[in-house]
Picture 1: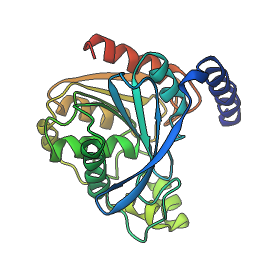
Picture 2: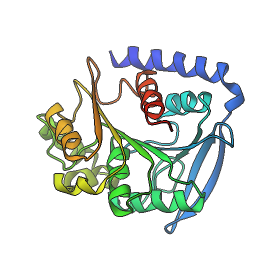
Picture 3: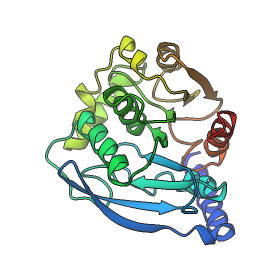
Amino acid sequence: MKLAHRIRGFFYRTALAVRYRRFGEVTAVAEVNGQKLLYAVRGPEEGKPVLLIHGNGGSHRSMRVQALQLAAAGYRVYSPDSRGQGANEPLSEYHYADMAEDSYQFIKALNLNKPAVYGWSDGGIIALLLEMAHPGTCALMAISGANLYPDCGPGFEEFKAWILKEGTPIAMMMLDEPDIKPGDLSAVKCPVLVTAGSGDLISEEHTRLIADSLPDSTLKIFGGEDHGSYIKASPKMGRSLLGFLAEHKY
């Protein structure tokens, strides 16, 4: 199944890249919060800004399908590699709060005025922390497969064993972080699209807790999908994201 998703995703990304080749990727480096972060940009310069934040151990290429879909729809898409990941130098220690501050300073450094922000997995956590620390930064937000604390589903013990086996600083962070109380989400005032797969590592109960704790949220559970199959190897999340942006006239 995973191989089939990867093959389907490869052909879909290739087809999109050919169809929308005028939205070629441009990369640069931003110096923010004491870090040098490589980032990619797609889409017309006059387009409304959308910031994509990838998951643990990923890069700006992790959500390439969504970047192409958004660029084709006229948005200006910014996809940074998070600190110590992608093309950036690895670090000896990682914390979600640091990455949230990186994202905030990235937005300020590039003069992105109230962007829409989409975060997948760790990226969803970072997006929530960003808006909690700096209310009013985001016009809209979408998060996929995010969690408030580590023990967020029946598969956590198995996942914990994998983390310990990996033993890398970026993986070990997930043993103790994040530590967000449901009540803390009341600080996120912008509309938020909350998604997960029905077979996600994050339980549906936990995802519903997040949605219910946000002042203005829309919940979508993708049936028959896992933590990333509707994102990395599929146009499904991009279509939902575009619909959400259009609904809010962004």
